[in-house]
Image (tube, rainbow, N blue to C red; front, side):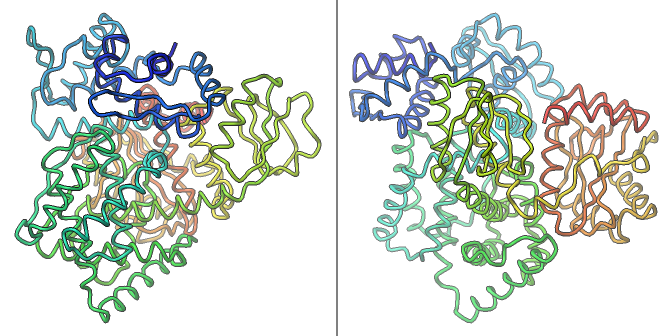
Length: 640
């Protein structure tokens, strides 16, 4: 029986159990029980039950729809939502536990959390120790206490960000943040009500758009802390913010802690108070000033739309959010008040094209271009553009009205799968068909989903799913589908057309990273693939924010998408180099034309697939011919 199933069975039998009783009966750690309860609460919203916390008693199960509940309980005996059988993934989880734990943690505690044996953890620790040593961090073992890490805080933070990102990529897809936010929709109605009450209580003025923007920041806060990513450094001018904002921030954190069962670092109050301050000041913007700022935003968005074929300038909500964000941003910068974004690493990879748009928006904005903005501030801007993309994708999903679900046979799990799909495509009618009786009316469908590979002559999108797709797989389907239905996406070219023998290079000389970029960017110009300003724009982008990713993969690109020919230069380094503390083995120099926005996203996803396979990166770096390189790259594309 799964972890979910064991907890559900006990609560169904006893109705109410304390966390200590659950720990005793299941031999789970407290942390694990809280994670399972949180997952069950999310599931319960659509499965006919609810788990409430009763003060001084514990968790109480309430069944609203017994038929739906029993069906769900039966499914838990067949599908295991958690798995620590993937050795590489398990080792990442152990690293994650060690890095985020401020004190000691025992081997037995790690084994309990991962639900594996003590000997398995001991075996994995040999690999974990080598990874830590490579990052100049020591693993200290103290009898009767357990394990803890010793090293410079910067090194620990850096490795933590890398490990957390890899875990996120393993568990979810590239839009994990938005998938997480969807599960919080019901609770955040309560958060908004409490936020408005606290504004009135503390006599702080904030307009409607300011409140909506604060909801975004609070979602980020809950997402970050629930994923073990606690506060990064934050420097604030407390005298500028004022006591009222601090008192409201303290009250708000107490409320969030109780609602989401989270413990917040005391320093979070500084960050939250500064955000309340920045949004509250927006109501004080003079009307003449607002008119000028709106004009600058509209101009910058129009230039981006013209260059990328996007639709930012017609999104009124985006323009309102940017107006609200930019004035406090400039105010903070002027007063030396810095905000640190703990999600910056995730944002720069997960939403790479939104990050690029943010950089261009700053350059095109008459006033923002004069400020020296930090990477963290750029990351916050990127989330506004990512939210725009998400809204567009969701609109495309809502346009799907007819879905054909093709299975090997009309088995009972087909009905369960249909029910799950109905939750993700609520506006669609889903028809189930066995592959043996695939109807000729397939062309009337908007989408075909199949549990086995099928070949049909149709223009309708066809996607293959596993028989028991998890939530991450279903969410990924929606994201890919959103892009597939986009007009801009339809015009992109196959990725393999970006590579050619002319642009494959082996750099034998030991040179620094930026020198190599300048050298081969100039080659792309001389060969007629790139425009004259490509080298300067590419170096400017790289110096502002490095695109050296994990496992030796780098993906530099220019600030402008204005290629003569869509292309990608590949530079293999037999002698790997170090840039800003990261190793570089293979460089994928990206050069795409204007209005090929989604092509850039596909390239980013390809690079993520490459960097997730260290052995492939190693093989790529050993390539000495274009043919060898294509052989190894094909291995990635076969996995897609």
